[in-house]
Length: 284
Image (cartoon, rainbow, N blue to C red):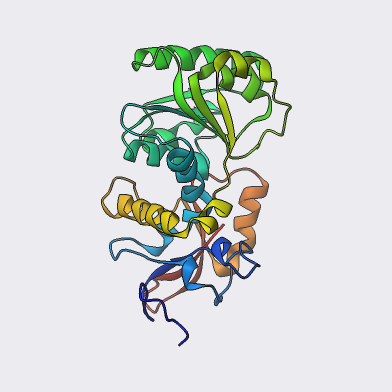
C-alpha cells in the first residue's frame, strides 16, 4: 500500500535489487518470502520473461554491463576477452558483448567448461588452465585468434574475474595499446600488478564495481537495466536459469558454490503458485 512510484503498481511483476537501497542495509540479499525495498531498487519485468531468468541480473548482468558499457564503451567492431567464461558473470559478459555487436573470445580453466560460453555466443573458446605453461599457451592462442578476427594489435577490452597469475602471465599481453582491463573479481587470488608491461602496452586497469556508480547515477543505471531487460525480451540474450532449487533446498544451492560446481545462473524459487509455476525467485 506504500507504493507511490509511477513506474510501478501493486501487482506488477518486478525485479528488485537490494544493493540499490539508499537507506543502508542494501546488498544483504533477498532470500526471503517478503522484503522491503525502495522503489528506486525495483524494475518492471517484461511479460515475455520468466521470473527465474531475471533473478541473477544484479550479481551477473549488472556487473558485466558496467564493465562493458560504462567502463569499456564496447560496441560493434570491438573484440572482448572474458575469462572465467563458464561462470555467471563470465557468461553474462559473453552474452551482453555479443548483444552489443562485439566479437568475443571466452577463456575457461578446463576444456569441459567450454560448452556454456560457446552456447552463449562466444566466437572462440580457449583454455587457460591452471599453471604458467598453460597460461603462456593461452596467451599465444588469444593473440592468434585476435589476429584471425581482424585485431592484430590485441583485444579491445578484457573482463577479468579470475586475476591470480593469469593476469600477469597472459592477460596484459593480450590487450591492445590503450585498451582496458576491467577487474571484476579474483577467483584465483590477488597478486601484485607489475606496472612495467602496463606502461609498454599503454593499458588501463580499472576496478569494476557497479553498485556505487548505480546509486550515484540512478537515471543512467535505470536506462542500463531497461536495455538489459530489452535484450532478453528481444531474444538477443537467452533468458535462462541454469540451476534451480526450491526454497526448502537452499542449502544445496550454497553447497553448489562451496564445491565450485555451479555453472551459469543459479536461482532459488521462494514460492510457487497452485500450478507449480515459480512466482517469486531469489538469486544466489
